[in-house]
Length: 241
Ligand code: TYD
Image (cartoon, rainbow, N blue to C red; front, side, top):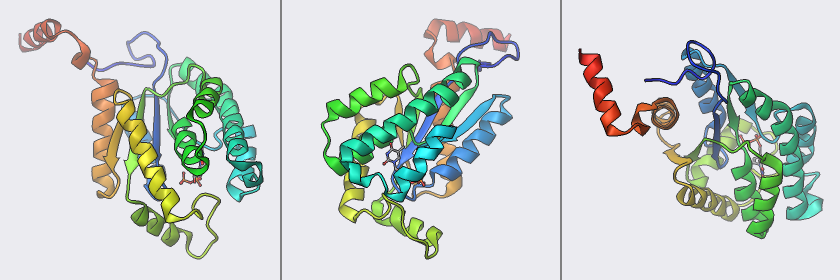
């Protein structure tokens, strides 16, 4: 049986929140697009969004954060600015969507602060988790997909895509930083296996999309998997009858 999150025969319920995370050049934006199309084909209302940004005031902060203008605040200051942007994003885009039953798919969210600002500034993890608690409230992702790619391969993709344009604030960091970053993302996935799935982002685009869809189906769409075996057997018997 498939959940009907927004109407179509089922009771209205809070939407589901999916985030895609990963290092540079992992292909998140493409995969967000493919996932949104697939969910919409199921008749689900989806809000696609991104961080930093995703709401008017947060988009204004995005310019500051990605231009490098915020670097002079230091890693703690940058973490706070990313969190300030997140507060606006959660309050004005994510929460209203989830509350009306829409699903939200975000290209990056709080795990990026854990990984990037954590890896960059060796910040006290208590500070990062406290900022996260303040910024996201109830808007905890139901599912987070980590697109995992060796940093050398990811950075190569990014530099090809950039085609001569200057690297942004974080792309410009050295290989050691991007290696730490990958470790940090994998560590999060290991400590929160119920929420997180790692997908190999070196695979062809369609295979990556298929792996993401499998995770969405098994973890968010198929409610039968969570039912007691007796109930599932009864349903199967009814289907056969
Ligand atoms: P963006 O142009 O969206 O790149 P990408 O395709 O890699 O997502 O740039 C976002 C950059 O901001 C990216 O380098 C990661 C960084 N970032 C943080 O450092 N902390 C955060 O909390 C977020 C959301 C992003």
